Length: 387
Image (tube, rainbow, N blue to C red; front, side):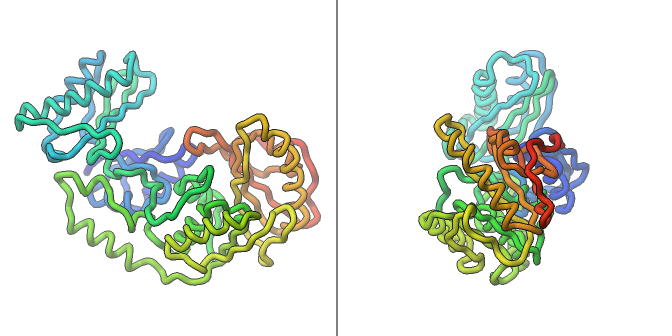
């Protein structure tokens, strides 16, 4: 049994924990920013391949108590790094901390790098090179008040980089956050899903991949393939089973729209790159003027929200009109709106039945839920408290 830690967007920790449990993880413990869990090496491969929520899967290779920076260095140097990866692999060290007494994380990063290199030099007479841009091996160190935990990153590139994407928009939504939001809505086929401000199509693609049971990591490589204990046969079997499980592409009850033709072209390009060309129904439409698909279901959107003062007046005018459009034309739907603008609930004029704190990278957001009941919506100025 090995120990692992999966990172994820903040706010999705319990969703991640549930997902890991379905993959067979043991002792899953959600904490701020991710979930700890245990399992065999094959589970690590499966989590990288199948998780729609995780950002990275980290393999714990050491833990030690410390008082000073030198203690962290000695703990790192004592680990058998040559047993984990070949000296010809390039490395990068990342350090994060909560309530740690160390004065400089940059200094700790340098010292851990020196410790790893010293371990190789003592054993083999040579040391690995450092590559901070595209390393073969990523070493992660997490410091608490008195404990240092050492991890090897088994993912490589972050897991929200699914592969097979043509391009992103101006402010792309990370794929694992989009997948987590879809899970929070409770949406599943055959209920209609509609994104009327689809941008680069992230919600649409993630929803389609969920419907087709497509493993999000089936078309990319991973960091664990560069570790010394990599079991290629085990990995091939897992990936082959995942590829065989994927359902044939078909027309799906998933709809997208945007008022800009150039944006819809980007969406089509991304859908085609994901093998979903013509499987998601698209149309050019402004949500303030057009009507949704005939069959009510779940509408999810990530509308523009400004961080620049110049945008404030435009948004102040947009949100009330958005609320009116939802109230007048989306009766029977449940709407989910992701926004970092905390003025939205005051301006949109609808009562939120739930709001969930989430983070898009470092940006704090809320996922607002609105149940759009026919003839019963009233303009309100307040929303329910954060859950």
